[in-house]
Length: 68
Image 1: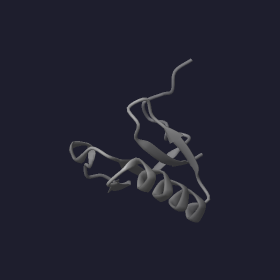
Image 2: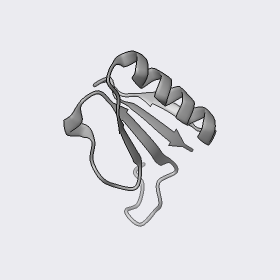
Image 3: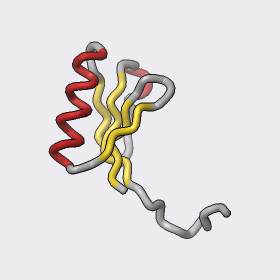
Image 4: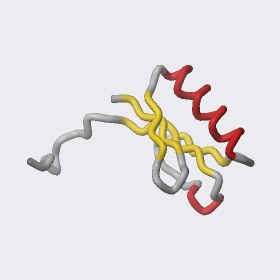
C-alpha cells in the first residue's frame, strides 16, 4: 500500500556524498563533493557517526546519510 501524499516520510535525508559535481544540489540536506572514493567513504562514516544515522549506498555510487 502506498503512502498518502499528505503524510510525512518516515525518514530524513541528512547528507549526500558524491564524486560527481553535477549531483551537488541545493536543498535541506548537506551535499558534499568528495575528491575520491576513499575520501567519500571516510566522510560518510564520520557524518553518520556524528549524527547517529544510517548509511545507504546508491547504485550510482553516491552515499546517503539518513535518519529513520
